[in-house]
Length: 169
Image (cartoon, rainbow, N blue to C red; front, side):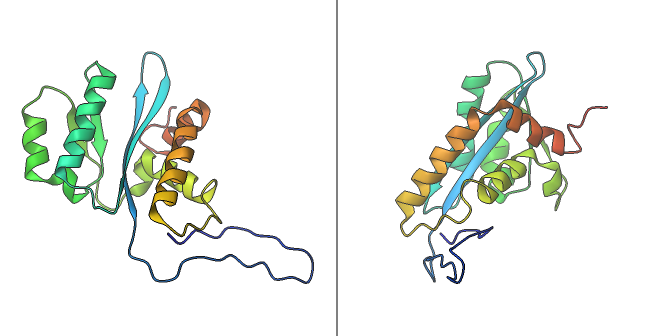
């Protein structure tokens, strides 16, 4: 709920003031995927928001089912080591299907995960200096900016090219 403060301005002699909520225990959890179609050389961004809850195995499985319907083709899953990703229920779901093939990124390697670049972009650009005083408004604003990001293929491709895993010679 507290915004990342990047830069502000005010008329000369007036200190800029950014009001924000102090102590808070509310959050919006997000699950997302950047999908690269090798033949078409296009990138798609999928996400779901979960206000007030931590992402659990059931949320991961629902998201994977959604991706599987969207992608149609065999696909590969590279993801971080979130507990819900490593949960027994998630592993059983993945082992019961031919696709996706799932591989974990090394621990403590956010620079390899292109989705981290997408979240960093959202936090540092459209969501910066934007305090929210209630959870529905934060979720609505995040959803709006993430949907806008879905329509910027060059920017989505840049998140992949920033990761050493996807850099092309």
